[in-house]
Length: 146
Picture 1: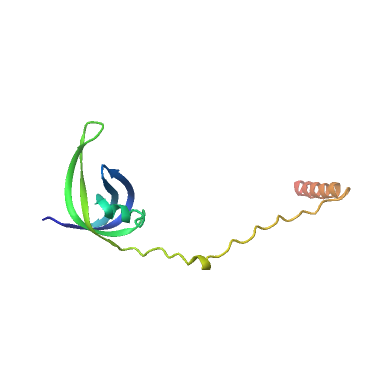
Picture 2 (picture 1 turned 180 degrees about the horizontal axis):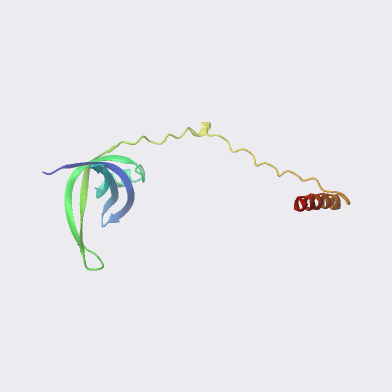
């Protein structure tokens, strides 16, 4: 039996039922470096049955995973008539490599701060408005004269 081991990050995931079987489709990005240039290979991974149903809520986009399974090379026809190919890994084993996000217990979650009341602006009395405008226009006149 041919077996492949892949380490990479989840780029996308979809869950669906295929007849009586559950399928979790993952797109895995795995990077490699050749002569100082980094390349990213995308591998399709599939989890089937009860395992797919149980793991769908625990795998998130960006999670780093180690996958082991049976590889399959698929050839397909694109909408424009050209042929394409992809490597599909039928996953037998999965290991989470990125740490699980820590969420504090509900009783330790911080409470939201009450919203601040808007500060009241001081209203100007009659006469202050014109003196304020005059002082601004005077300073503007002085600036243009300089």
